[in-house]
Length: 612
Image 1 (cartoon, rainbow, N blue to C red):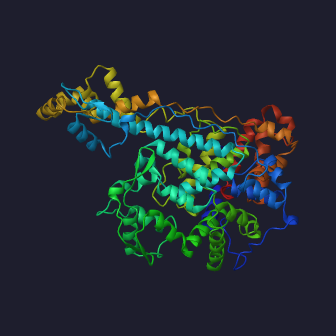
Image 2: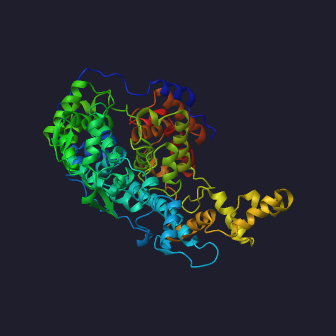
């Protein structure tokens, strides 16, 4: 772009240095008393939508601003007065076959099982001939590829719910819990389990935390992710027991290693069959456990109840909600106060959030516009403020989210995403600007990633060599070895020996990977690939804006929680006027769209736009 983003490098240095992040607290303790009606207006309504949803258009902000503070908060938390959420359900591609369950942990485990049983994954091995296990290996790679692609479709479906739901807090809380109870499809390897867990978060995310915690503890995605299958009587696995205390309920330092061991015993036998929780009684340790100072024949639910009786658990969850919705700054006294609220409300998340979002503290100057937007929040709020009705297929939502650091259904660790300042580095800030660029000016070289494997050169190489008439053994060799010249001109006896061995094999892994991808794209429905239907010209003309200064002012008010300084806004207006060749916006109506898109890119690449 010809425009240099108003000395973005200087702004970036200021941002990373902390000038544009949360200020020091104005007072030692938060004022959590309710905000007064006379202090309620469009600015407060915009902030509420920004934090408890994914932002909003001016019309959506005006609806909340016209209500009392109590009614506005209840509209978001309890959906009172909000339109019914008539959102389409996820439409599966029909890729799952019954024989795929239970899915083996690896390709070697799959072929070992096939040798023992004469087949695996619902596929029989060939009775004779070369590569008798090839159909089984193909099926193994098919499911890896197909589940990953279908999970990407689930993420798109969810993104569209975030964008269009009249109940945005429901999806915002699902996103919060997805980061809190982080499971990754790379290990779960079953889109059905990931979708089922997401629906659990959507259904129970604003309910009571005890119900949610038990549901997650018995959820097949979590059970698969934290190795429930090897947590059995006599040989307990401590993964889930440790994480439920350290990451999900209390935090480090609130338990000891003996508590971990005893909790693991209580959860023995908790497993799953398909998509259902399955308590394996013979694998459960029914003996006496000593946990957090109590003694008894505890099972997993007992352990959860003992944890939730601790003040530390209520303070941990309340503090994490405060960090997400308000600020990372929280005194010890305030943490105890908020924990007391949550515990006295029997861990009712909706009741707790109603009180938090209605508090004067939520609207304080050192809270508003001091939170760095997460990548998904950043992308969806941009689409929502633009008034889009669907998430574009180009740029690809999953690729953008991954490039910004938050690919849905693929959190980096069981601890989820780090959030806060970790969302912003110099490279990530430029990637955010590139997202806006690709939105405003679609990439003409765009290739749908769900139709093209990430390891495309390898797969395409196999396909081209097969089309050229090579047999499977030669076609699936690395590119250099597949060429006839190397075999005859330098590899000698070693190459000839390898080739003979390769043609007498139980299976060919590279061919299985190639064939698995082919089978997956045959069955997984493609993601629609429309580009964003932007009409910035219509937006400007409908608002009656006449000068570049008015255009910049409107876009700043529409998109920003923290406005760029007056000098920056003046420079942006001068830039727009230069692109228009006039200061009369209406006179430039016939060619206004491209200059407005250039301005949008410049504006939304600003460090200030990253704050909400």
